[in-house]
Amino acid sequence: MIGIGSDHGGFELKEKVKKHLEERGLEYKDFGTYSADSCDYPVYGRAVAKAVASGECDRGILICGTGIGISITANKVKGIRAALCSDCYSAQATREHNDANILAMGARVLGDGLALKIVDTFLDTPFSGDERHIRRISMIEE
Ligand code: RB5
Image: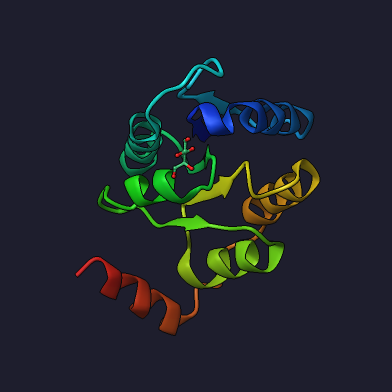
């Protein structure tokens, strides 16, 4: 189960990502926002982060205008490793090296085509499991 959320700045892209997930046959839970009306990104960033941290969702996708505010919020929740990605290389590397459990994107930064490729890369790339990466990830939580 993928948890997805956005503020108004990411609302349109969130709807496109949801359609893309449906086309791929992937299940998601939409934590809002549910319209393009102005709202506060921490509400949605925290909701998705808590759902991932609790195990209700396996991964999360968060979108705001830049991806910055919503990723900062998510990373305040214990156990969350939210990665703000604007390219596929970073999306792949953050899965392999950081075992990132939330992808954050900026809707005002990315074109839709690139955003969907980043989503696919993030969802389809496994954690490497390398000892050095496990060690470094455990150091984040200390
Ligand atoms: C909203 O205008 C904008 O500030 C928000 O979407 C995001 O970019 C914050 O980091």
